[in-house]
Amino acid sequence: MNYESGSLGGERLAIEGPDTRARNRRRWIIGGALALVLAGGGGYALTHRGGDAPAMSPADQAPTVTVMVPGSGSVARQINATGSLAAKREMPVGVAGEGGMVTRVLVEPGQWVAAGEVLAVVDRSVQAQTAASLNAQIGVARSDLVLAQQELERAQQLVGRGFISQADVQRRIATRDAAAARLKVAQATAAEQGARNRRLDIRAPEAGLILTRQVEPGQIIGATTGTLFRMAKGGEMEMRAQLAEADLAKVRVGDGATVTPVGESRSFSGHVWQVSPVIDPQTRQGIARIQLSYDPALRPGGFASATLIGGASNEPQLPQSAILSDDRGNFVYIVGKDNKVERRNVRLGTVTDRNVAIAEGLTGNERVIRSAGAFLNPGQKVVPVVEKGTEKAKG
Image (tube, rainbow, N blue to C red; front, side):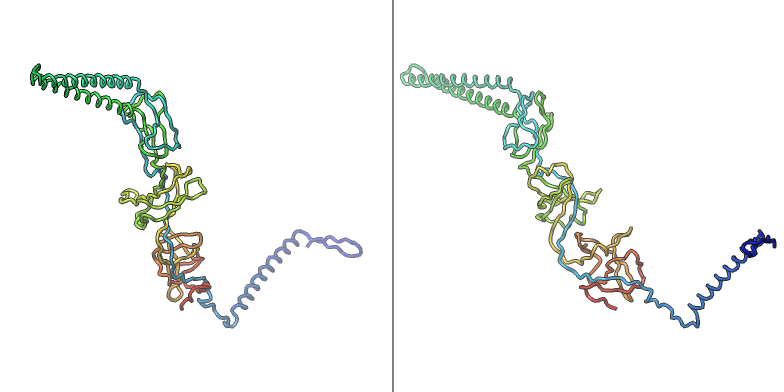
């Protein structure tokens, strides 16, 4: 070792060199390693001394779970669906007559109209002249009839005196009858023209609500023009709810329903008035038509959701925390024989904010694990604790 000696306050000061520091580091490393070995050995001795420490039993290792026996209760059948809003009876209004140029349109979408009310007026200047000509012909035919009748009456007076023959009287009778026939023809022709002129106006076939307008003044319309207005008969609306095949089988005419249009906070009450007799082979869905009273918020073509309410049935009810799902569908865990976890596939019924009704899969007498099912596995042993208010668990 290398020391440098010096005197400081009467004491000798030793200064370590590089070799001394290296030896000190080796001593610290070796000492630390020995301390770890001794600590490990002491811990092993404490936990295993004498072999007297009891081993943990499987029951001590099994998790404790809360179970419930749901039983069964009356559940109002509810089916949720989506669909579109529409007029219950939509009436397209087009050209009934020969058409022409539209001079005036008298209604706007959203306006209520009466049966037979004029919706649009078509120019009839030419038809008016034709009608006047036919009315004049009626006057001519009537005058001819009056003249023929008078000549017949004079002939009948003269035949008795021998001034004219009976054959002349017969000819005047024929002339009078022909004049009467011509009058009837002229009247029928004028009436026909009047009917044609009245059909030039576009009229509402029934009382109701104007939904769309597709015609403007100055437009030329004819038999091939197509639909000019669309109306909702009586203003009645409906929702066409799309339902799965299994749900559609449960719906009956007269079942109540609540409809909520998209973007609306309000809901509207209605009832099912028609259930589709066919199923779409592509989507496997059918339509339940829900009748609704008119409201400005019910706009045909809009999207809405509906809850259909039918009869009641007895079904078990579980909290939502008990329901699990995977690629095989919905299921719950129950505690079966020897307190082992069993999987039970279920089909859900009515879902509310509080509970979920089980339509298939449970009788209501099972011990169903209320929560924490996601941390369990089928066949795992558990310690069941029955929820207060339900039946006692067995075994």
